[in-house]
Length: 614
Ligand code: F6R
Image (cartoon, rainbow, N blue to C red):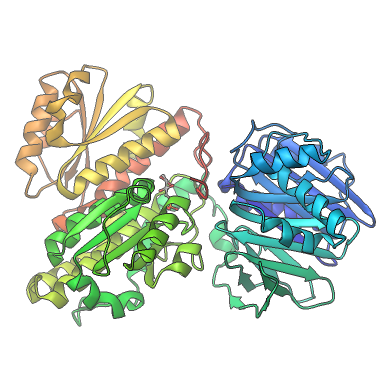
C-alpha cells in the first residue's frame, strides 16, 4: 500500500513523477504529494484526495527541478489530509522523504525526538523518520544518506523509503525492508525509483529490485551503489524488464476492471502457453518441476493466501485433492502466521498472491521457511518479494492487473493450480492417461469458452440493472463452485458496497435461509455435474421463500431455466474447469452494478491493490 516514485537526472522531474503516481494510484489513493529540488530550493506540494487533485493544484505552481520524489497514500496513521500526505520534511526544510510501510516503534522514537526539541506537524509514523534522519545527521555530522542508514538501525517495521536533501541536490537515497522498491537505470545516467516497475518501463528496461535491508545510493555522474544496512557494498543485480507499456493502458475500455475481465481469454492462454500440449499429452510447470516429487510425498500442501487469492487456493484444494490425492489445507495467511502452526520438513507451503507483496502472505512464508518447510509461490508480478523469497514457483503470466478488484489474476491462479493438480496427478498415477488427455484438451478449449461467456455481457448488464439497488445478496455454489460463490460475493461487496455473502449451497438452510424474501437476489452456480440435483433442490427452497434466483447454468439447461428468474449460460466443460467459466458472469455483474451505482470501480473506497501492511 502507498505508491512511491522518484526521479533524478537531467529531465524535468515533475511530469515523470506525476505520470508515475497515476500508474501507482492503485496502491492507495487518499492523498498525494511531491517534493522537487530546484537548484538549492526544496519545494513540497501535497493534497488530500486523488492524484488528480494534486495535478490540478500544481497548475499554478512552479514545478521546475531535475530531482524529486512523489507519493500516493493509503492511510495507516492519521486521516487523509494535506498535512498527513507525504513527503514529510525535516524542521529545517532541507530533507524530504517518502515512505511505504509502517514504523512499528514510531511512538517510542517520537517521544525521544520530542524530548530533543522536534515538533511534529502530522499524525503519521513517517514524520518520525525524517526527523530521525535530521537528528542523526546533525549529531553524527554525516550526510543524509549515512544518517538514513543509521536511522534504520533504530527502526522496527516495514519500509520502502526515498529521501532527498537540498544540500545534496545531485543525490538520492533509498532503502527497503518488506515493502517493494525498484531502481531503474536510465541510458543517460538518470535514475527512476518506484514501488513497482510500472512508472519506470517507458524510460528504461534495466532495473534493480532492492532486497530487504538494502540501501541504494544514487549520485549523478556515478554508477548506482547498493549497500546493506551494515554498510557493506553489494553488487547491484541488474535485470531486464519484460513488461510492455501497452499493458498498462486502458486500451479503449472505460475501466481497467472491464479491460481485465475481457483479457481473460488471452491471460488464461498466456498462463498455459508452453506449459501444456494436449496433442502430445504433457503438462509442465518448469518453475516447480524439481519440487514435484517433494510435493507428491509431502505430508500436506498448505496453500496460504488472502482475499481473492485465498478463493483461488480453495479451488486448488478441490482440484489437487481429487486429481492428485495429496492432502491439501488452505489457510488465511493472516491467521496461519500467528497460530503457531505445526510444520515439518515434509510440508510444502504454497503462497498464492497476485502482487507477490502481501505482508501477511510474506510473513506466513517466512514462518514456514524458518520451520524447515519447503516454500513455493504462485505470483503474478514478476520479481515481486514473494517470488524472490520462495524456493521455487510458477508465475501466472496474467499481465499487470491494475483494477483494484482482482479478476484475470484469479482465473490465472486457478489455471496454474489446475496445471499443478494435473501434473502431480499424472506423475503419481492418480489421473489415468485417458482422463489426463481429456482434461488437457478441455483446458486448451477454455480461452474460446471464456470468449463465449463474455458474449453474455449485454444480458448480464440487463440483469445488473434489475438488482443494482439490492442491499444484500447471497451467492451459492457447491464443490469447486463454492469458492466461485465466495469470490462472486467479494467482488460485489468490494466494488458496489452491497452486502453480499457466499455459502456452500447446502449450508443455506443452516442459517442464511432466514434472510430470504422477495427482495433478496441469490446468485447460484448450478452447472451440470456431481451436485447438480442437490443445487436444483436448493434453488427450489429459495423459490419457496420468494427469493430471486439468478443462476449460472450449463448451456441448454431447461430445468433450472424453468425455475430461475434469470439464467446465464456457460459452455459445457469438464467439472474441474467450471470455476474458470462460472466466475466470469459474477465479475461482469459486479462491474455493471458498481458502474450503475456510480461507484469508483477501479479504485473502490478504503482499498488498495497491494496490501503491504498487516
Ligand atoms: C479482491 C482482491 C484482494 C486480494 C488480496 C490479496 O479483489 O484483490 O482480496 O486478492 O488483497 O492480494 P494478493 O493476491 O496480491 O496477495
